Image 1: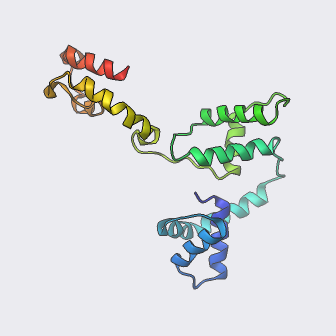
Image 2: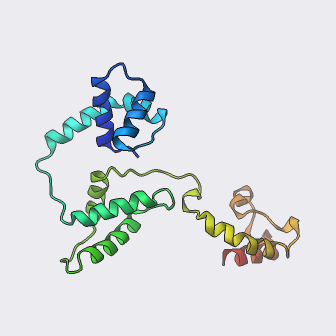
Length: 196
């Protein structure tokens, strides 16, 4: 994941090395920042260079003073936790706050009361370059090891039904005009047993 700071560093490097190819820029990012990025990411960053430079200049001019982070070790640990888990789970604001509470209690056992407000959450995200990424469908919340372990149990339940009585509940959008009372009780019972 490229933060705005890394994007600006890349843009400045490109200005200092105008003949560099995108493949060379990818290699430079990997060598200097330990980031593996695609050519599309580099290309998109370079296209947005004017916007990013203007944003950086505006934010530097408009910021009155930088607030110091009250619990820097907690924030560093939370950012590390976020990076380690972002690919496996959809990390909502509530989940980030909950982890922050656990981390602060472990690292600062006698800390004064601290509220992890929406404002704190937003500034934490900005400080660590965290952006919201939309995952498609339910893929972001799927734990494949749990799925693999549960498949045999699901197959045993499904074996008790006829093939014509089995359908994927995700496809129920196909039946959006069907009245509720037309759903067979067997399908309804099956969907309830699978949901529980």
